[in-house]
Length: 86
Image 1 (cartoon, rainbow, N blue to C red):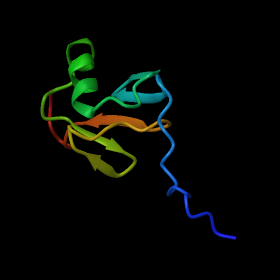
Image 2: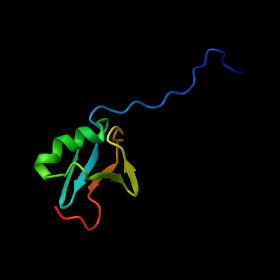
Image 3: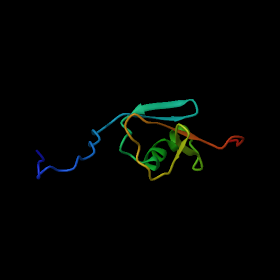
Image 4: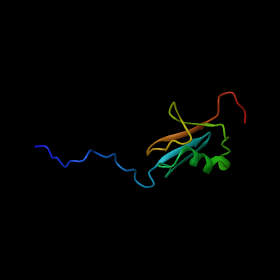
């Protein structure tokens, strides 16, 4: 029997303070980064870890844009292009 009042399934809401990990070089910081944008995290760690403005953010081999939201369980790594000093 079909329920005529059934609602389509909604995606599960992200729990507040969901864990993700941020990495740059020798630095790694697990924490409540899920739900924040790549730009938010870059701004928070740029001076502390000396992350250059042109460093790209990746999850695995996938490059992230600055406006992308970090998902729970992701390990976001900032990298400079190979062969660049700084």
